[in-house]
Length: 121
Picture 1 (cartoon, helix red, strand yellow):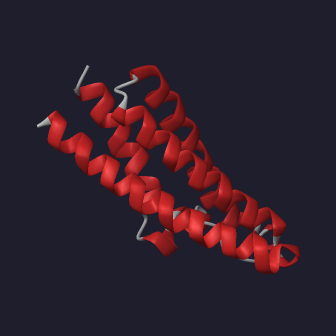
Picture 2 (picture 1 turned 90 degrees about the vertical axis):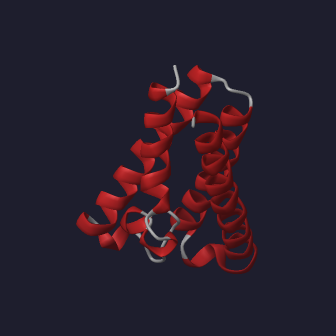
């Protein structure tokens, strides 16, 4: 089960990584001045997703935990901030509203990933 689940996590993270990379690259290249904070956060999210894929594939438990905890903190912080301080975001990032624009996968994947790391120890 853990091997199949890890593959599912890799696929989920790869989808988010490609989507977030494409979105942030386009936004940074074409309209960075409109909302540099949100677009930079999207680029950071994309990097986190690629790092999570690497951690899962390499079966690096400590690296996976560190990346997924940092990612979860980022998603929860940005998600909360978009509700409490909406003026901070002139555009949505990948983590805005807890990943609403991505079907909440940005908050679900690190939670599932941490569960998987704990379960497969």
